[in-house]
Length: 95
Image (cartoon, rainbow, N blue to C red):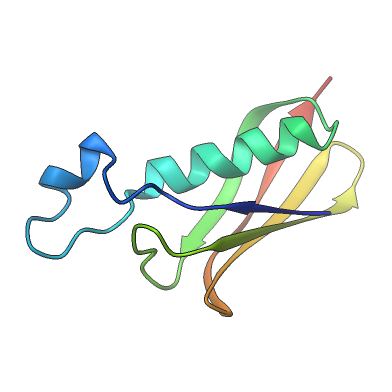
């Protein structure tokens, strides 16, 4: 399953993250992942097992959140921004 997401260029958090070269804060990207996990019917995230940020996510750029189920209750995720892997990891979810 995959879900599109992007951070609006006028989001209030961007004024301080970082002035002159705004980047989507990692916590907002992870929140989008957690929302996608819930929307896909996996339940609520109860634990972030691991996450690795590999490339910046710029405001207004499309991000494709790709989910997989490597084991019951575990959800793998990858975030691709302009075809580049920006974030990968795994979470645990419960209904």
